[in-house]
Image 1 (cartoon, helix red, strand yellow):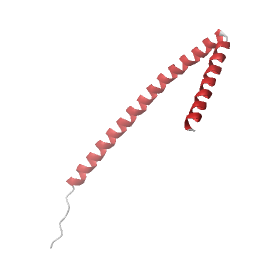
Image 2 (spheres, helix red, strand yellow):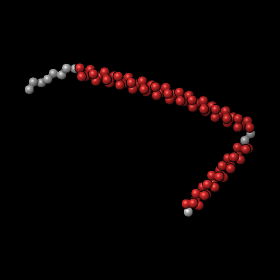
Image 3 (cartoon, rainbow, N blue to C red):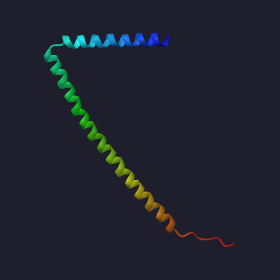
Image 4 (cartoon, rainbow, N blue to C red):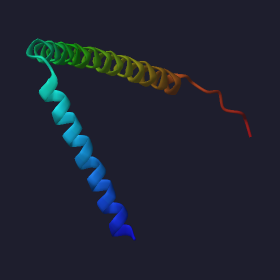
Length: 88
């Protein structure tokens, strides 16, 4: 029973592929060129997204470094504070 459902799924995918190919054959050339231009525009925005991600990552790294330095300085100053001992 699994094989028959698998076969019918493959047949459905085959039909969808055929319909897509037929649809692409019917598209006018100028429409295809506009689609290509849109895809190129998306690639350009992807590059700017990568640049934004890099800036955010760099900012986070700088903030963590500052926080680490601040914590280390605070830890050292706590160690340097003299504590009075109680007499036993």
